[in-house]
Image (cartoon, rainbow, N blue to C red):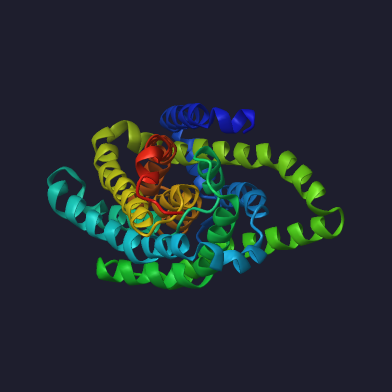
Length: 343
């Protein structure tokens, strides 16, 4: 891994602190930035997300979908967790904790928005950071690539209907037009741009040139991620400083969801005799969230200062350290896993 990736937790923590302090000290600056919109889409956030996502999506070879048959058990487990368990378990956890357990301590007018943010966070599986997590647990690169390609293809058609279903179940009005714009801007457009760029580079220099491009664009992508964190936590700076208890309460269902889904995916893979190099990334993909898309959609649908945006930002807050802890557990348990796995 490069310098940025090696110390990613530190950079994320620094950006969270800096963004929160800047947002608290100079809220008017972030209010102006938050007002730069088109069709309810915040343009500064959109630009940073495109810069961040496109280089990461360039790693995805949709031709890898042909390899699905090689790892059908691991892919089946991950798809089951991503699309049949995680979104619904998060909706249930949000309903249980935010509408009941923590309801007396939460602002009543924001509860629906908080639940919506948690649903957006869980409704899309991670595509970008998965490559980092898979590398850290020595995962099978072919499996990770094919799983990410498949999830991206599914997200194009499934994200908006799934979110709409869960928001409807939670009695939250679905702004279909804004949701459709978000899917187009943050899934369809980046996938098209990344696929076209990848194809052009491969035609004009092959894998070696693509590797050079990715090496150059990698730091740019992570820089955009860090700048976006500063911006997002700046938008929420005053809320975070004024409501630390709310942040802690929003983090609890997110933490439970990550550990529950990663553990379930890991155990199912072990029961099915899947090799550890597939089970590791399967558990990580099953648990992690495409928080870039969740944040962008929350900002587009509910606004930069909404409870939904705050909930997705809390997801960013816990994503990196929690996923690193999952990586640690996957690596430490390899001996136990292999005693039952038959490969």
